[in-house]
Image (cartoon, protein in one colour):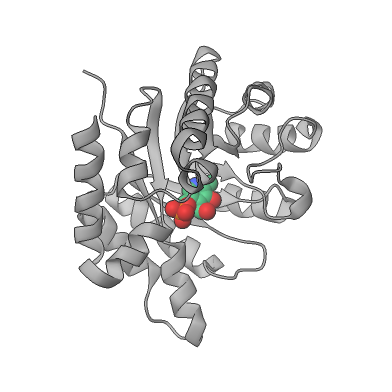
Amino acid sequence: MAERVRLGVNIDHVATVRNARGGVHPDPVRAAEQALAAGADGITAHLREDRRHITDRDIEALSVLCAEAGRPLNLEMAVTDEMLAIALRHRPHAACLVPERREEVTTEGGLAVAGHEARISPVASALSTAGIRVSLFIEPTPEQVDAAHAVGAQVVEFHTGRYCHLSGDDRAVEFERLQAAATRAVGLGLEVHAGHGLDYQTAADMMAIAEVRELNIGHFLIGEAVFVGLPTAIHRMRAAMDAAT
Ligand code: PXP
């Protein structure tokens, strides 16, 4: 039997709320601790160049927490020298390279790897050499999948934002695009993850793509936590994923 699909919980927006008042509450590290206790398979955090939510101190504390818990930390980062140095210092389990600036984004929102191989390849290589798994957050297109493979990524995370926003036939077409890209990625030896905009229903939908090994979910879970608490939101997400598997 295939291993169950992992659930990575992104705690960025706990830091967004904390930073709205400039204090220490709510603490994203406490949220990460709760998420792991509730069954999250790993923690995802995005250290943005402008530090609008997660801070350098959060990454330090999350690294310690995940190491102690023996669970993976997935550091989302822009392709910059500064972020590379931070990743090499903390050595998270994985680094997911994401776009932060307009010029790094494809029309729909993933990282433009195709056409930018010369810039991304050395960063991917430095991360891999340090034992950090390299994931690229891309649109589900053949060009981006092939480029991700060419620059030496081990993982592609497909941007599901478009799927989540569409409905009806348009959504069905986008699903086929995700499925085709997942098949292509696995054919090249890449592991497939998915994330962005997922809720209970769309996360369950992703379970129909057998190649998907991990979902990374933040905004919806943190929003739900306001109403039902974070552990319950995570339990419900896990149950939705398992019921659809
Ligand atoms: N995966 C990646 C690479 C992301 O950058 C994000 C945050 O935008 C997510 C997953 C989670 O997206 P959301 O917060 O919409 O669940």
